[in-house]
Length: 164
Image (cartoon, rainbow, N blue to C red):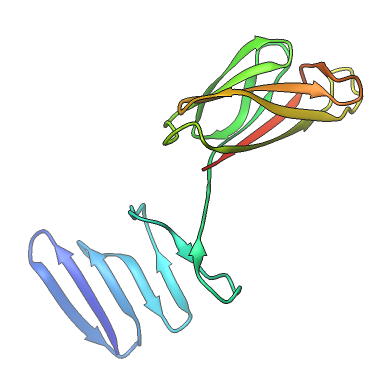
């Protein structure tokens, strides 16, 4: 038996049932949460407060810590963002030194980052280290260093991810 609960702005709370074996939560006739024997689906943009936890076959549920911001950009010349999430802009502070500005601030500056990149515009591939220089809730300043010479260098491909 399926149960559908619909919160309607015109008719109020409406419940209906059939024999499909699912549970549907609706808002104005549109299903936003569905539970069937094969799993759960959530449609649309939903807001959840508190910690997101899940069990992906590891035997227990644990808090998921997501990537809060990420960017892939060209660090040569004027920095150009190729793709990003929660990054509004890149500031070029000089050779191999950039500030990644967040669209929405982090709760504080106590976040972790990961970075990678490479390929000098001359076509050669080089080792790259992406190091945090400074950070705040609104941005992170990074340096890109060519590993073989340990010098600040602009790279064609730079990627940074922020976790909090």
